[in-house]
View 1 (cartoon, rainbow, N blue to C red):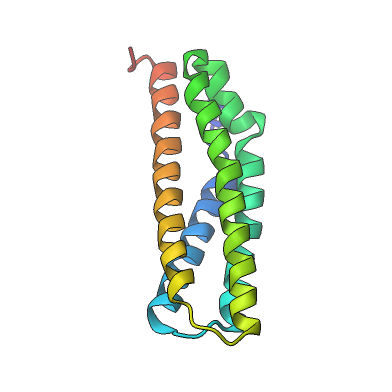
View 2 (view 1 turned 60 degrees about the vertical axis):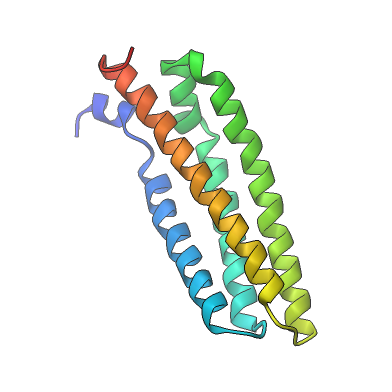
Length: 148
């Protein structure tokens, strides 16, 4: 890999985190599909998702990701700002899910409401990640001269 390749490729740590987050989301989806009561494992998986998202968003907000986009394509700054705002919203949502899962576990409660909230969160997260990929691709294409 040449030096110029490292300047135009997204951080590989971020790519690995995408895979980890996707695995956690899949595991949680399976748990909600199969379990009717909140378990310690469910709480643990949600805690893990929250921690991974926190680290993932911090890395994305560094210069190698969103900074790269703004350096290469400053006209995309409004879209970057919207995505950064979504990071805060998604972190709050996952923290709320963790709190609700803890309460449900302590009270030996069902997970129907929690599962519904998680499904909405999952949709928002997937939509957010798609927008980030589209934005990075647009900046990358512009840098290569294939954009407008």
